[in-house]
Every structure is written in structure tokens, then in C-alpha cells.
Image (cartoon, rainbow, N blue to C red):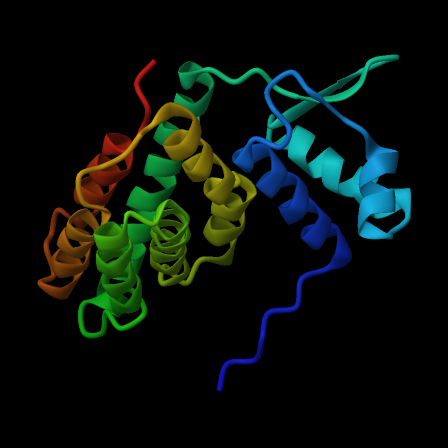
Amino acid sequence: MTPPVIHSLREQIREHIVGGIVSGRWKPGERIVERRIAVELKVSQTPVREALRELEALRLIESAPNKGVRVRELSAADLEEIYPVRAGLEQIAAELAAPHLAGDVSRLAPHVDALYEADRKGDGEAQVRHTVAFHRELVRASGNSVLLHTWESLGIEVWTALSIRWLGTVQESYAEEHEAVLEAFRHRDPRIGDLVKSHVLGCAPRP
């Protein structure tokens, strides 16, 4: 049995803030008060400050002297910038992962099944979660820890959620598109790297 994932306090706070931004609790341009979050979550301000610093590195929030921390005013162009970088990383990952996934796509298949269910229900949260999980497993299958760390540092889940919820970047069928990628791995398609790159770029919002 797989042991439960235990997130650090900083990661839990980061997820709380991201959830608030994605859900609209904190809107673009709105101030996020470090002290209020600490009181709300019953923690010290230090891990809150660390979480905010990480989100600033992701360009999700911004800080200025005497003005505090605010949610960035993000445009489609801002969100679009991440996709060519991500597509390049996943192209490399797909080529490295191909020999491992050709005989066994079991790490990808459950997320495709879950996406069919999410598509049927119109469950946006599940669509984001399983889309990101599918791609994380793809990158993990490359066996390259540096590649995985770099991909993780892009904050894919945050940007995917924002693209879908803020800009309405919705595909007709998340499941069918990801099943096509899965089948390409299963059938040892020699164009797998280019296929994955095109797949990622096709998800990008248009400014």
C-alpha cells in the first residue's frame, strides 16, 4: 500500500493561498495580508512568509515596499508564456519515458479513466487534478530527477487551474486527448516527443 503523502506546513499554507486565488477569494490586484493568514490557520508568520515567497517566484503574487503582497494582474499572455517551456520539458521527458511506458502504461491509465468521469460530470476540479497528475507521471517515467524537479518548479497545477478557471481554456474532452497520448506510448509511436509537445502547446490559452 502506498503511504500517504505528508506535506510540510509551508506546502499546506501554499496550497491554501493558491486555492484562495484560484477560487476567487483573493482577486487580481487584491492584497494578501500575511498576519491574517497566520491567525486564520493558527500558525506563525514565518511559514506564511515562506509560502508567499514561493508564490512570488512563480509570478502568481507580487510585493512592493509599503504596499504589501498582492495577487498579480495576470493576462492570457502571462499564462501563455509557461506553455512553450513546459512543452519543451515534456517533449524530452516523453522521449526518455517511451521505453519504460511502451510495455506498461498503468501509471497513466487511471488518470485517463478519472478524466472520462470528470468530463462526464463537468467536474473542473477533477479535470485539473488528473490532467496534472497524468503529466506528472509522464515526466516521472523519464527517470530524470532534474527534469522532474524543473517541471515541478513551474507550478503546473496552479497555471493549469488558472488557465481553465480564469480564461475558460477548456478542451472538448480532456480524457480523449490524454488517451491519445497514452496509446501513442503503448504503440511505441516514434513521434511521441513531438506528439506530446503539440499536445501541451494545444492546451495554451490564446492572448
